[in-house]
Amino acid sequence: MTILRRVLLVLAIAVALPYLWVPVYRFPAPRAFSGSALWNPYAQLHGTWQLANLHAHGRSWRGLTNGRQSGADVVRAYRDRGYAVAGLSDYQRLAGHGGIAALPIYEHGYNVSKYHQLAIGARRIEWLDFPFWQGPNQQQYILDRVKQSAELVAIAHPMSAYTAADLSALTGYQLLEVVNGHFIAEDLWDAALSSGHAVWIVANDDTHDVTDPQRMAVAWNMIDAPSGDTRDVIAALATGRAYAVSGNGEHKDGVDAVLTSVDVHDGTLVVSLAGTPATILFIGQNGSVRKTAELATTASYTMMPQDSYIRIVIRTPNTVMYLNPVIRYDGVRLPSPVATRDGNATWLQRTLIAFGCIALVPVLWRRPTTATTM
Ligand SMILES: [Zn+2]
Image (cartoon, rainbow, N blue to C red; front, side, top):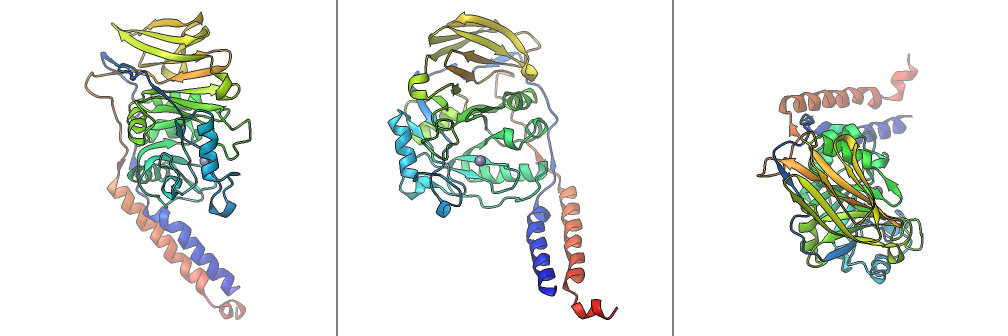
C-alpha cells in the first residue's frame, strides 16, 4: 500500500504542477466591431490562388498516433492532386524539419478533452499541455505559449472541445479551423467574430489515411499568395487573404466555381465568382443571415449601421465556399483584444495549490504501521 500511495502522491504533484504555475487571466469584455471604415481582406488580391491543406497526419511516434502512410507519402498524395501547400501536422513533431519539404506545422495537444492547436510556421515544439481538465486560464496559457513557437496559431477542430463562450473570451489565436473534414462549426466562428475577434477561417481534411474518401481532399483552403512558399502563404493567412471550401466530393473533380473578387465601395460589398451560378448568403452579427441571392455569379449587399461584420457564403452544387468577413473598424487597424495576466490572483492561486500539495504529503507518505497500531 505504501508504494501505491507514494506513486499516487508523485502523480498528483506532477499533474498539479502545471496547474500551479498557470496564470489567472483577465479576459477582454466582448465588444462588437465598430467604426465608420470597412476592412476588406480581399481589397488587394494577387489573383493567384494556392490550393492548401494545413492538417494531415503521417505515421509518427512509432504508430502511437496513427497516420496510415509515411509523411512523404501523405505529401505526395496531396501534390498529386494539385495542392501547392501540402501541410503535414503530426502531433508534437515538426515533420518539415525531418527532410520533408512541407510548410512547418505541428499539431499541439495531448489532453483528453482534445483542445488542439495547429502551430503554423513553427520554429520549435511547445511541450507543455494540461492532460486533464482545462478551464479558460489553461486554454489561454497554452495559446500564448504555442504562439511563441510559431508564426500563426489555428484552433484545430474547435467543434470537438471549445465552446462559444471559450472562443468569445480567448485571445491570441489568428485562425479557426471552422471546417474539419465534413464537420463544420460556423456558430463558433460567429461567436468569436461577434465578440470582436478578427480571426480568419481555415478548412482542412485532418486526414490520418489518404485513402479514406471521407478525409481526403474534402476540405481545403484557397490562399491568395504569389507562391506556395512558406513566407507567402503565412503572409496571406495572417491578413485573411484566403477562403475555405467544403466539398461534397474530392477537390480534384468537385470544383465548380472560384472566387474572383470582393469589392467594397461606399459601404456596399460586391462579390463575384467564376463558374456555375450559386446561392450567395451575406451573414452578420451572431450568424444572422442578412441577405440571400439565388442562382447568381455576382451579388451585392449594403452594410447597415448595425452590421459589425458581414461574411459571405457561396453554395454551389458541389461546394460551399466560406469567405473571410468584411469588418467595421476605425480605419487605422483592426482591434486585437488581449487577455492580460492578473498578478495578485495568479499568486493567490499558486499559493493555494502549493499548500494543497504540501498537505498531501503526510497523508500519503505515512508508514503503514501507523495505520495498523490504531
Ligand atoms: Zn487534433
